[in-house]
Length: 308
Image (cartoon, rainbow, N blue to C red; front, side, top):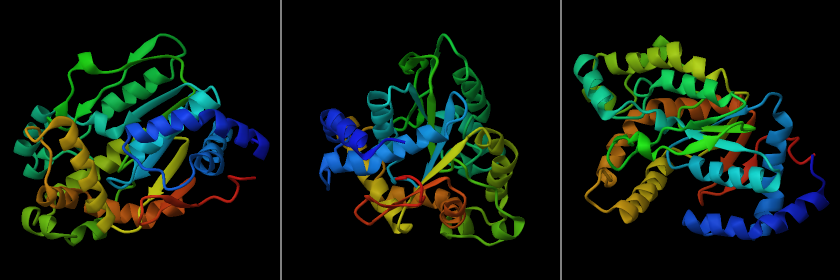
């Protein structure tokens, strides 16, 4: 583990690129950036490195929509690469979404709610497994898929970024990363108006649960470390997801599939069941719990040995 002196020196080295990253992400630092680096992100990065027993070290990052998973990954990538010299790959479970055409087929043959991306059953798990295997290679390069939310479809392969192998650490983030399947009893009662009115017989939520149980666990079991960004409550999902959509609108304009608040509220209901379950269950088994306050800041770290 880094000594306090080493953390201070490394934080000074990373201050300017960290400021640039925050600016690019449109984030206003609430604390001194040097303190954020030396007191928060460097200890986290150092702790994650110590946990790595194989190469690459697959790290799952779970968090509700809008919690800041992609930003955390970018910060960790900066700190781990520029600070510790590690080679990092970032993959979001969002980039494994089935194409819109594939989801149209699911909606027609299984359940109409499967047209909406997000829940287990709307990802290409086999693609994820192939990517994980390719990331274990020690030579060559790999193209990482990308999903374009502004067109609600997978981006053209010509726009997928290529990374050189080998990599030391894979950061795999997503709202349902590490999620466990529910019991039949838990599925019986609708959790919101979407389930009550549009999934009256429970066919959709049982299909989602079956996919989560049978296929997604194969992917999640390959993660050696699970990190959770814990939101204060479910109301923050709508608030913080709205901010993401505003940023998309600024970047892409209104002509793309950017949601207004009414659309966001409906969209979130697809995720609500498993998000609530995760908030109860994952904090008890996450290797690292990062608790967020109402100001969207990490206010508490749920492991005792990170500063030792």
